[in-house]
Image 1 (cartoon, one colour):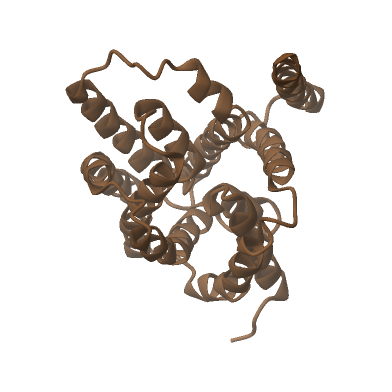
Image 2: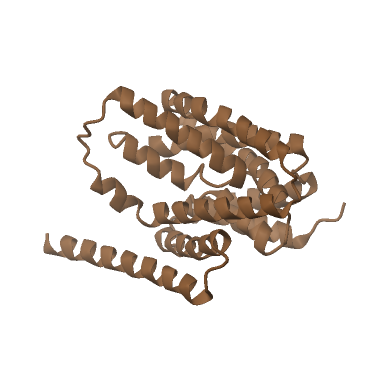
Length: 290
């Protein structure tokens, strides 16, 4: 089997960015496969799901050794996400995987997931800070909301491969403001592995996983993740993450709302950029005043 250099490069770039910034591979790889390599929508999602489950498996061992996983939260999330992932797979099985209708649905939900993910990356700090840490929610209410979050992630991840990373972390930070960020990240990774594995195996049963493509992507991504994780102190990952999030805003609106005029798409991006700059400027002003 010949190895396509473009796929190796794509795997390396995505792996490097994930290692450097922590932005989920699904939010990057699936749009790349769709827009740059013209991979069929269902195949791009299915292959990326198994790709994510393999690349994030190492994260479980790393976070587990550090005690950064809350297995109670993982169990609650999985109780919602795994059944919904299974049902979503059954829904896909009833569809014509090559039909324009399914392709349009996947692109729409992928675009929505990218928009939500990118905004959660850009404004995560502001969202968490706006929530009062002395939440009036009871433990039962938090558990129910965690279950609902799992259900939402099960649907989005199975249909689009996006949502298990940045979106999951942001939502968990809002629900559990008293838990340290490292533990939230570890918990999210621990939940993402079984979810992406179940969803990926579901796609495999539908024949929407390209194993040759999967292997080629991993050839690039494994060294990419290692190199990226060792460059966090060298490269300004905060700025890289923000630029990536802005790119995802633009890609997300193009996938979800292709009928929008190009000028409107650029206008949406400018609005997000201005909002981010204004918030950052106010933050610096407050720090200076102190």
